[in-house]
Image (cartoon, rainbow, N blue to C red; front, side, top):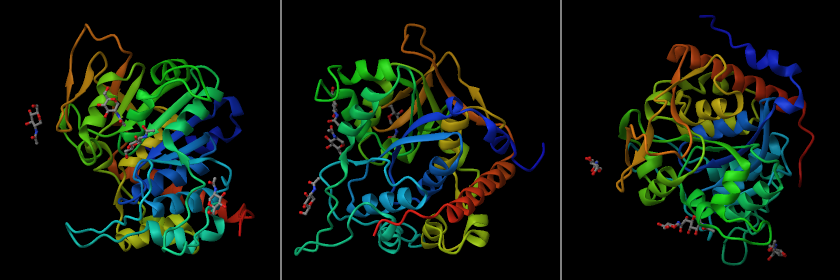
Length: 346
Ligand SMILES: *[C@@H]1O[C@H](CO)[C@@H](O)[C@H](O)[C@H]1NC(C)=O
Ligand SMILES: *[C@@H]1O[C@H](CO)[C@@H](O)[C@H](O)[C@H]1NC(C)=O
Ligand SMILES: *[C@@H]1O[C@H](CO)[C@@H](O)[C@H](O)[C@H]1NC(C)=O
Ligand SMILES: CC(=O)N[C@H]1CO[C@H](CO)[C@@H](O)[C@@H]1O
């Protein structure tokens, strides 16, 4: 196995039609691997990022998300967030080791953001320019070509559950499930453990939302489990060699203090954009994921279930190689962003 990842670069000449239309559903709040995923979603040539929805309702998540989008050349990509928003911040009260990065990325890169950092007289940040996540799904899906959208879910399931429950509105006369059936090509999910287990994205917020989405979604679903990204470490190269003023580099440093991080979310994003490519193969075809009310999950074999193909991902290269490939992609994206950086807002 070669150790340098080139197929992403070879595809540079690929036509625009070969790009994947991505809606990113992220819990950009605690773990920094969402930042790695967002870096790739905004800088991979094969990614056509249509919208970002955040499922933790923190004003700092919105500010960080907006700053990252602006910095990486996507100032007009709409940003949605679960409502109502509050001012919660992350604190690592488990290991007392990991730092908080959303408020710092939001503040230090505020010049790239389309949201105002200014606090009102009660100290509350103004983030009222963000979309309600479910409305944003309905708008983007209603405007899309049929069967053209990949939703890449790397966080919790409140917004997707809200989308499933949604009804006709100003954007579309279709219900949530009808809109999904018409427009969504694939739902790619970081969450669960395969063939069975227990993972944070599934149980960490409201596991009933997870069960609602995974057990009812009609259409193709691909799962990236705890065991996949949990063994692949990345980010050290970006922290060491990345451009000084890169917000993803800073986010990683503020979170891990220089240590490589597990790669659950960026690996999932790579699959959502590139497909299997040299990175992945499928497992579990013919079976279904089932999520229990407590958020644990199990792969079941049920021939009565005709909801559409489901599978989970396995890695093709070694864990070390995949980590190296990720770092190459982070560095390439961060370096290109420096060259293209002409999009300060304020
Ligand atoms: C956001 O708040 C500002 C200040 O209160 C107001 O001027 C603006 O119209 C609001 N924008 C939206 C979209 O509600
Ligand atoms: C959507 O509806 C299901 C019941 O059909 C409910 O369990 C779930 O909480 C609802 N989701 C949201 C986000 O309110
Ligand atoms: C979750 O529920 C499943 C099914 O009832 C059960 O097998 C499993 O032990 C539960 N897990 C936890 C951690 O409670
Ligand atoms: C419109 C809608 O259903 N939005 C949901 C997104 O998730 C939050 C939970 O954080 C729900 O309260 C909202 O109803």
